[in-house]
Image: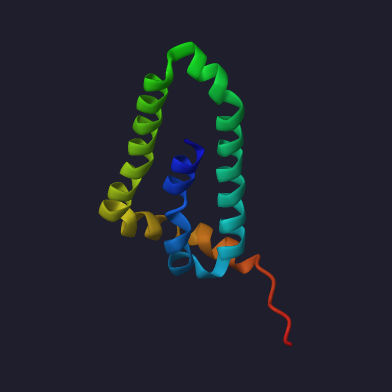
Length: 104
C-alpha cells in the first residue's frame, strides 16, 4: 500500500526538472521529505486503521486519496500556464537565492 502511494507521488519528479530548473535541488528535497513523511505515517497508522475500518475500506480510502492527488494533473494541464505566470516572482526570488556552482 505504501508503494502505491509512492508510485503516485513518484510521477512528479520526472517533470520537475523541466519546469523549475533553477531550484531543482530545493524542490526535490522538499518533495522527498514530504513523500517520506507520508510513507512513514502510513506504515505506523496502517495496523490501527485496518483494525478499525477493515481492509476493504482502507483500500477504498487509499484509492480515493490517490484519485484526488492525480486529479491535480488535470488541473495543472488546464490552468498550469496561469499558475506559472502568477508565481513567477516567487520563482525568481528562490532562483536568486541559489548558490553558484564552483568551477572544477
